Length: 230
Image 1: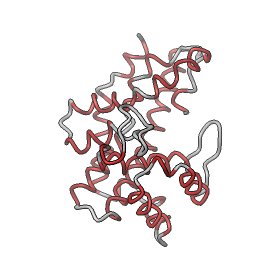
Image 2: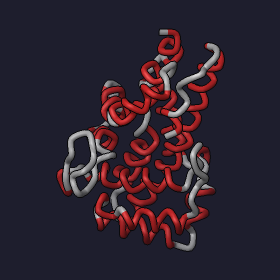
Image 3: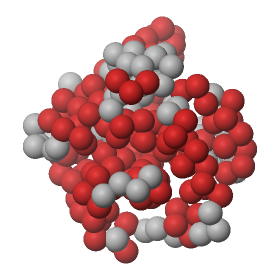
């Protein structure tokens, strides 16, 4: 997890600010990809336009809570991080929910964000919800978030190709709503998938373009520079 891996041996405040700025860029890029996938998957599932647009917003903003963790994670030793990493990781979806709740987002968007790490078999977090107790939007984000992470570069590995990513997801299919996962497979196997995903720039889509503005507005509320100096 790149956000949690750059915490020690930071030599200056300027360097730390640069690390946080890089994390913000990474978060936006990941959110953009999840946003595109979630919207397209919702269309594949036959959902109405309002639902699809809500999933675009939820996809973009789902990890914004990670930015609020910067004050707790930076300047720590690797040993402390090893002991506490999962505790902090499992805070971020709830933090995202709490941050965005103050901005009057719909319940559908907030629930999708809050529970996007719940697994269909009940092994996820934060509440170990199971099956259809997990909001539908969260079940959609779960699939898209995992796929987006797999096909992206990480400090500890290169990006997987699409076929390998799908094989890895099939191995963990118990985590997903099967109806949603099968729809995702259809979407990935479609002839236009590469164009839909890799050539879907946000400034070409009015609805998703609004999402990037919302992300940046919400990020301002985090007072990241204040966090750095505390």
